[in-house]
Length: 263
Ligand SMILES: C[S@@+](CC[C@H](N)C(=O)[O-])C[C@H]1O[C@@H](n2cnc3c(N)ncnc32)[C@H](O)[C@@H]1O
Image (cartoon, rainbow, N blue to C red; front, top):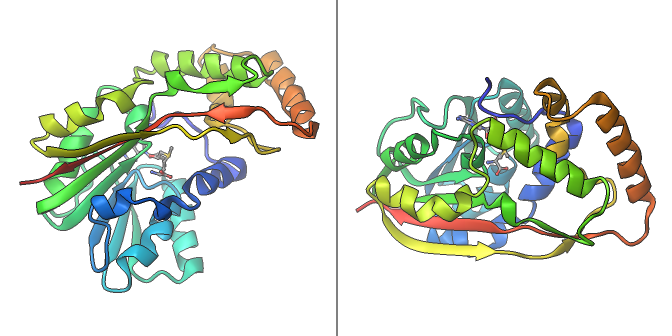
């Protein structure tokens, strides 16, 4: 079974870019050591959207190195980096739990929205991230408790039904939907000193045309028997109807962030 259960197409790529947009604005990056001249590694970097947001924080003297297991993500990431002319950003294929990068060669290691897809390998990934940072360097983990996601109104079709099926799909893959709550314990077990643990639960209106991560797993859910092709046809119609509505539902998701320092 592949490590990552979501399919990459243009809709999913756009979702990942939107999810990364403005990511560099929060103070969490400064706390994690993403500052001028820093060497940063992003494990499970996807199409490099977050690294491109962070490029201005590290400046030309800093470096950003991204690793992703999926060759399509790597290809799209490399294309995005080339289009942005970001000479100090590198994207390469590799595993978050064993990247092949030199130990102790980074100021900060980021693992964002990756652990939730790696049930049973979470500690291995965080241990590897810890091994990549220099003494005094930091590991920043960002992940969800997806059981806490709420929609207002709560039973908006097809979002609520799709969300439940997606939860079942991820659990069947052995993933922990509440991994966000475990971030400090993962850092401590990797021998790091936990400096920060916070959450952000900002309600936002669904954007017309928006499909969640579950949409990127729709075909896999059919293959795994969690959904049927009839479900997909119904959800497609319902999404189109929802897109046409002027008043969109609210989405409230809880993101957890934790920083551990290597002594
Ligand atoms: C939800 S995306 C997040 C991408 C990026 N970190 C971000 O925040 O935009 C998860 C990414 O992690 C990658 N991934 C998942 N498990 C991985 C592993 N064990 N090793 C390397 N990449 C992995 C997937 O291929 C995918 O690109």
